[in-house]
Length: 160
Image (cartoon, rainbow, N blue to C red):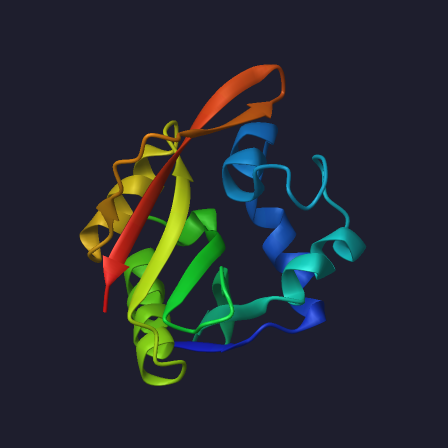
């Protein structure tokens, strides 16, 4: 049974193995935590956020963070969402996100949750859509310079 628990620093060794190449690493982190390959010490910046690890029968299967974009808890923002590649396309991502949304609403009293996803990360985008996230249309689109390319970040939000 899938459950969320607070991130522990010793989780980093497993989680960092899930980004197998540069593209998947930057789709996951946008380079915010550092360059590929990331060291465990660098990853601890993510652990300073409201960080959660998803477990299924004691095995790590996913990770994400929550943070407040403002002083209020009305909106929370998910980030650094990742699922073990061997567990993808089996419903773990959806289940983890649903647990995260329930936690955001029931524990923090959030009214909405937002996130960003790169346009070139279709599987993640479709997963987010499947749990209720909708595209946010904005005049300001955020672009990241990743490994010599410009990547478009799409904003999404769901109301709880």
